[in-house]
Amino acid sequence: MAMETKSGRESFESFEAMKAANKVPQTIELVLRDKKLKQKFETFLIDRVAIESLQFLDSVAFYEKVEKPEWRVRAAGSIIAKFVSPNAQYQINISERVREHLLNLVEFEKDSFEPAKNAVLALLQENFYLQFVAYLEDPSTNTMEPIENVQEYYPKEAYLIKKAASRKTRSSVNRILTRNEETQEI
Image (cartoon, rainbow, N blue to C red; front, side):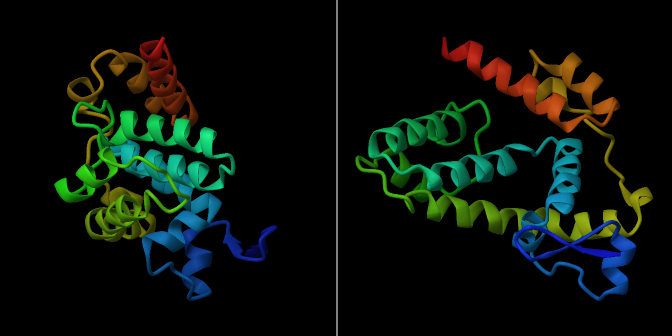
């Protein structure tokens, strides 16, 4: 059941195949490297209204690829406004020390977000990894009601997010959130 990906890593069609091959990922980083597992983890986080951590990691991955310093500054500003600033709409859970460090940066290097990235990965590992593995083993163990508290966290988008989530279309949820952010920037 294992198949080769472009990068040479194995990707599995199902959790059962992964277990049979004794290849259950032991860390959240390994989950995020596998495209199919990452998609399942994304759905899992949406159900728990905790998608901002994964969106932050994706934004930082994009930021780290930016070569031109002026573009890097723009990308960093966007990440800070969206995830780090005290009034950020999708504020990530990081220590005040790390938050202040990022808010006070003047020059942005490729590794400027490394402390926040490590903090978010640790948070996902500690708070969601074991639940996610249990969910993969038996989806009926999902004790969370999907998107129940969405009104509290995303009041303007609640109806659209619930509708998209009921159809299991993560990309629709992300498009709704992104569209709202773009209109707020204008």
